Length: 447
Ligand SMILES: *Cc1c(COP(=O)(O)O)cnc(C)c1O
Image 1 (cartoon, rainbow, N blue to C red):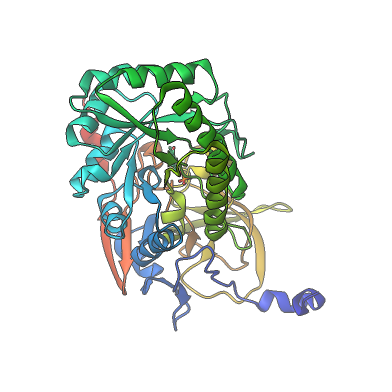
Image 2 (cartoon, helix red, strand yellow):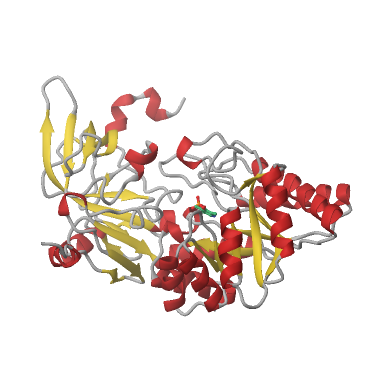
């Protein structure tokens, strides 16, 4: 039992700790009690760029990339752009030695306009159009992942020289996540079920095309995966499949892309995927599977998205009202919500907002933070600990919002999407400006 638990009266006096597990490293309270990220007070960003605003710490993104390069020196690490696809991030991660994973013509265009060498791009995705595949071929994308038999036909129509491709297989591994992110099981929309007739047919068709060069297999098991053993199992199953393809067709595949899904912590005390353990498990699984099938070790690729950018992001809101409902909850309404953080409604994600304009010392209350949008489900954080004197005008910050927040944002209720502001060495700079009412009207072309 800790001292705090023994003497509960001490508890209210303890200010929240800005845990480095969920905040960008270097986040701290300044002498005025304001939270600073990358040397910039979050209230300064709120005042200058308005709220809500997404804040992104460049050093944190770069540090995550370096950790991957160090732990997986021999793997090709693709940043999964769908987590946050903007030119600045593409530029930072590629300058740190990562390649880029894109899933649409739009993401491809962003990556190219950031100046990425097309050979370092991989295009994956379901339901891509002929134009999107053709654009990837035209720019010389290093790898294209085939997701369906239709893909094979569409891609063959535009390929001129042999296009290196990977086949996406679903290896039948259930990571027990939210149903929306279990993509490794056999019965879901992505890829070819491993061991199925359809997968065998896909291999046959790709190998029959001189304009497609099958170089390897791909899988993506899901999101927020904590247990590295799932990746070891994927290695064993996919190396088995590669050995089968060699036996059946005499074709030696040399690449194995294990997708992304590496878990991060969203709240203090939550676990993240241990990358050092992951590296060991992948290595051991490769050793065992390659020995068993007498198969040459394939090159490993991986596609982390969330794990690169999630912790670098913080969203700042202004408190608009505080309602203390008699005998019930305290409801704190902020000026953002589901439009900038869809993950709560989509996955039941949990967050821990903290007040950012002053360092609170208690007493505390339990409150539910809700958004401004016209949906009862527009809730940012249920039953969290906040200062009892929280009032309109206070600034709330929600950490770990760098991945799948800006990229999933909407303009529901005709409220423009928030800006994205980078911080580095004490300087803020706008990377994406706020969507204005004029922006919204411009697209509304009918009359
Ligand atoms: C979404 C996705 C990723 C990235 O997932 P994270 O959870 O952000 O790491 C990687 N590869 C593919 C194919 C994906 O669909």
